[in-house]
Figure 1 (cartoon, rainbow, N blue to C red):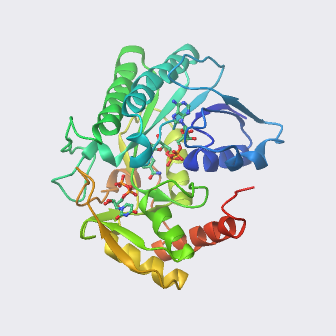
Figure 2: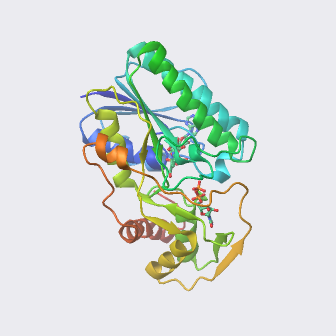
Figure 3: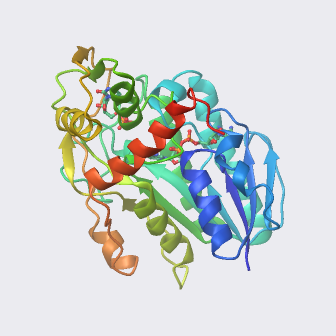
Length: 319
Ligand code: NAD
Ligand code: UDP
């Protein structure tokens, strides 16, 4: 049994990770400020003897005796990370430093939830880890993109200066149950709009692409990265599903799977919205024991639709 700290453990990804690590027999401490996360995501775990939850904002120092740290705390949806951009950068940078300080005290392994956004609006397809990216450092997304890039830099500095076993993963668009109904990201927006019979809001012409990864595939990849022995592989490593879809294709698949009669409307494309995104996962396949996604988009969407149908049948209240 390992003692493991998860920052952002009440969020979409964090709640699945809490479940997985408890199932594997670990002792889990979840810290979260509930900015975008919810107690309802982890309520079913509260009676677990090996689970603790602490309301804490990672921009302030924290201390714990742990063997592993997953640093997931950060709003991930553009509407939330742009809501208070200074706070987003503080969470990404100062928060990362506070988590690294805990790792240094304990000589703990620490994993950083970085993002495909470090590639910005990429000029190379698919995106391999060696690509340095094409980020607007001044734009509306920069609070998040540059915050995450700075966090990667800090992680590498702690590795070089102090020999801390760091792990950097670059997460590509991940979806599934426990996403917030108002999260604002495309998969949850389209499903909720379709189920409510509301208009499906496609931003721009809908020809921009994303590669959608189901949460179970992602959790497996992330845990393999953390557990990998020997612990000399820092990454960064892309964790994503290489099947690329346009946003128009996603909208029609959601309409088909929900049987919805919702109409599609087009809205302005947000600034700096990446035109194409697709992970090169050769490194993950090689270094993570042949890991690759197994859940196809339609299969993952059906599970996510079932989740939102359940929430909506209770008037949007989770549990
Ligand atoms: P989420 O918004 O559901 O979860 C983030 C969690 O962090 C929430 O519980 C939130 O309350 C918490 N949080 C935010 N700021 C905090 C702070 N200052 N102190 C403590 N807790 C704080 O998002 P998610 O999709 O679960 O993303 C988790 C991580 O993965 C994020 O770091 C995100 O950048 C990264 N990521 C996610 C995706 C994706 O597609 N889901 C893609 C790339 C990167
Ligand atoms: N998008 C859209 N309609 C929505 C929400 C998002 O067309 O209701 C588009 C958005 O402009 C982007 C893509 O879907 O091109 C993915 O957006 P999301 O916010 O999910 O993630 P990110 O842009 O961070 O990849």
